Amino acid sequence: MATAKDSSKPLGKSPTKQQVEQQNYQQLAKQMEPARPVFANCIKAFVVGGVICLLGQGLTDLFKRFGFNQETASNPTVACLVILSVILTSFGVYDKIAQWAGAGTAVPVTGFANSMASAAIEHRSEGLVLGVGANMFKLAGSVIVFGTVAAFIVGIIHGLLDMTPWGGLH
Image (cartoon, rainbow, N blue to C red; front, side, top):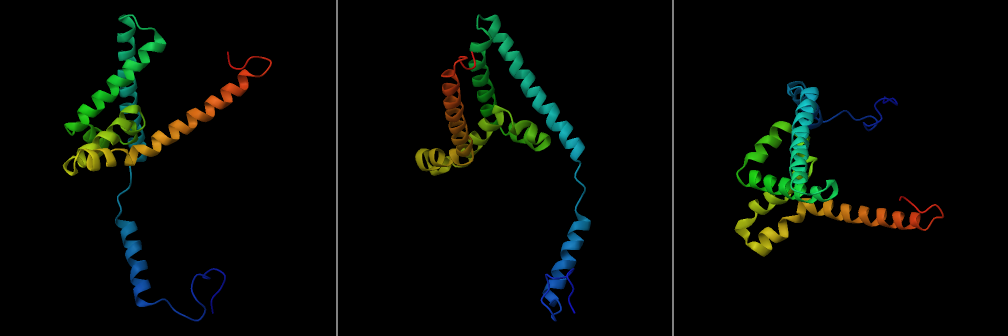
């Protein structure tokens, strides 16, 4: 008789041979699965993400030496990081770094550039419009839409706060 513990089984029916084999296989697969080095992966992601950010800060400081201020130096810095990411992606280097570092390369703007460039490279044989143009934004499209919607909402909130008696965020 079935109890509340094994309510997933129909009353009065024993598991079929296929269900038993599937359960045994799942148990064996779980035993054979290698342990994931979560701490080591976090350290790798932290270090590589930090190096990318350090490179970005170095570029910003370089642009500031050429007469840019803190605000205007950020635009060419981002452009340089994106171009560098696309170049490394086209030579297959960025993907090797990403396999080793994981999220450390996916989170900064370089990961966004990598996702667009790798999709474009993968589908270039299908032509410029139907291959590159149509498939380049598959992965990056959701990021672009989210960024646009978030900027719109922040803009509305900022505009509403500017209409308050204390003058908003200035």
